[in-house]
Length: 468
Image (tube, rainbow, N blue to C red; front, side):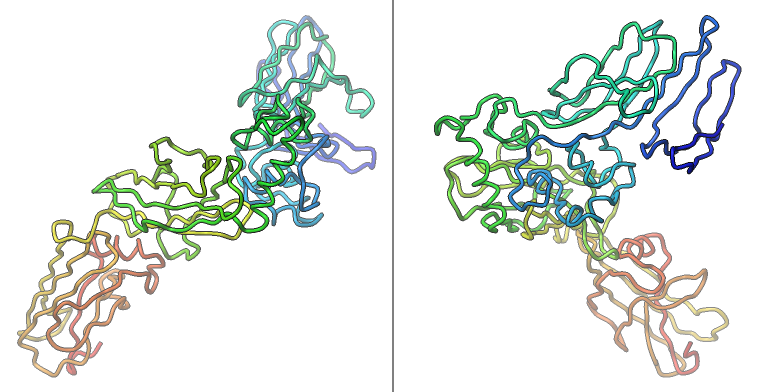
């Protein structure tokens, strides 16, 4: 099957036919510049019923709060730390998460530009008799409407029912009595401003204390919300909101949290919702905390979902990073938190256990002649790993060398012998501090720790008779 656009460019549809006369597209394709989601054909009463579900198309936004004048909602930029993704026309047209929607369209839909699962699209489209049932993920406060067409001509799209302002994360629309002819469906999303205060409902839903149905949410007077809203955005732009590390480490074994403090230096008249953008260590050799490693909570122990609010009258708020205990032995994992819309960042680490004697782990190795070496030498080496698995204290005792010692290293088996990951001082070694970090082809700290714990590392004492 072949489909052509008006400019005669074309895409070939790869199809699969089964016994029920279903046709299914095996891979995403483009039709008239719109990403195609699903397509099916069924025979019914000697007529053909076609349903084609398109990835839903964002429309132009009616009103946004855009103090930096880049055509994009400032709240969306702050929530997703996404200003760099819409800095110019090329950035807006790009698709950061490769989900089929440009960064600009993600801003219109209120979705996460870095998460391919957060995307405006038709979820499912099913048939029951002459009815079609359509589902679509939604963003609370955004406005949605289904459109129907019997062709792909722009002038043939007709709205079905009335636009709906989403009150949750999904909507289901039954389309009753659909004709047994070729039909196409799509969902348009745009912004609503229910109280006419100049702030879209979606943006007010993101900021605690603002009511999309009341232009005087704080009792300051008629239509006062816009000025209050702009003052909070200006505080972000003016770097009045910052984050610092209060308690730098969380420990799984002890179940003790790390802590951030978020502060504002300006007015405290209104509650201020601050968006938390989270990332791991920028150094890929280091451990990075994943969402499965921790839960962020406020001082009351309530889990946070991407933001926290500084109450009206308060100048700061605490964020606690509670570790989630697991059975893994891991190097410290870094979590970096950035205040959305700013360059203010702070970091903490999640560790297995505190560095006390009870949490240390002792590894012991007996030294014997290596390979074809002829020697009566022997010895013992130990590594005492601290509770956070970041440093090992190395001890080495040996005797009976037949020639002077020339070097001593910790090596990687590859498969029997290999390059060294740490050099030790000559002679008897007592309490050499070894930072367990990436080395040689073990390109992460965790890889070195894993190799140590699984017996893939060994100590080699070199002499002038056996220098290599």
